[in-house]
Amino acid sequence: MVSARQLAFLVLRSIGRGAFADIAVDRVLQRQELSSVDRRFVTELVYGTVRRQRTLDAIVDDLATKKSHQQPEDLRLILHLGLYQLRYLDQIPASAAVNTTVDLAKQNGFSGLSGFVNGLLRQYLRLSQSNPTQIPTVPEDPIARLGIQHSYPDWIVQVWADEFGLAEAEKLCEWFNRSPQIDLRVNRLRSSVAEVQSAMESAGISIMPVPPIPTALRLPQGVGTITQLPGYTEGFWSVQDSSAQLVSELLDPQPGETVIDACAAPGGKTTHSAERMDDRGTIWAIDRYASRLKKLQQNADRLQLQSIHIRTGDSRDQPDLVNQADRVLLDAPCSGLGTLHRHADARWRQTPDTVKELSQLQAELLQAAASWTKVGGVLVYATCTLHPAENEAIVQSFLQRHSQWAIEPPAQNSLAATFALPQGWLKVLPHHHNMDGFFMVRLRRQG
Image (cartoon, rainbow, N blue to C red; front, side, top):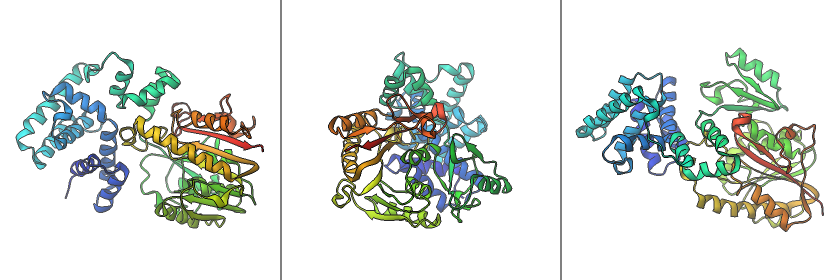
């Protein structure tokens, strides 16, 4: 039987070769017969090691003659796994972390370097026990210091420092290194918050409300397979983070209206809109990828929603939809800097260049979505990123070019007002609100 650590190593190797972390983890867990404890351990090792990659590299740089990037890639991953357990997993005895990592080296072609692996890990143990702040060595530059301490590329830290200040940037860095929580959105057409909460508690699951979001419940860590929880098959709830639930609250679709969701898959906000409309009206769910829309349709069927109509295509090229919608939702493709805790590898995949490309796409999508909106209609622009180039800059540029559009701040007594800033848009900050990071703004077409 393959050990959990060996499986984690194989997953990390595939991520290093270009696989997405969540897909690589799921693929291995589906193929292997593992206990729930081992499944959680593999997941923790992979996501944690990917997330803490820069810090772990810096430790290797301090302790080895050859820098981390000069090590054979498989050996680098093995060192990362050992160091991650020693530094971040208190429940693993140090001797077990060292010995199993040495075994990993031997199993994967590095028998001749097993002494090096053993020596480096034991050297780290000695240094960390005598002076925990000594390693890794951090530079005086505050951006690089936070980047190495919390394991982020400097450019992300710089973006947050520029926007929120250095102290707030560090809090964001710390928050995004937590394991993600899972929130549910109760389908009020099929059940209620009280009923779902009661069913979960009857199954021994201590689920909690997430104020001020009225339909949200938060699961505890380690609840097992989501699809086997009470009420899933019956369509009583969906998985959706609390901050994402706020988007449809801001859109506020009404029964009988025509709504267009421009980048709809996998459908969390589409199905939420249908629920809010009492499943009466028409929702056009558009996405470029038929495979992702298939998932949306499956969710709509499970939730027993009839008002959603699937449409495969590029939202920038839908001329027949001009002036057709009472409300339009553009939850735009983005860098995901508000959900880095969920996507361990995203901090290393995104770059300033990818953000620039995304901002161009976002501007084009917003232009198209605006054309679908009737006079007097509403358009909500939303992203799950905390990068002003994808948020404020997109909206401000659009408004400068379209005088017939204006920001419509949420009503003072509304749920959305809790998150509103003086400019009228909303920003959910994870370290303040304990939800995914989000930006959203409601625009009204006046003529």
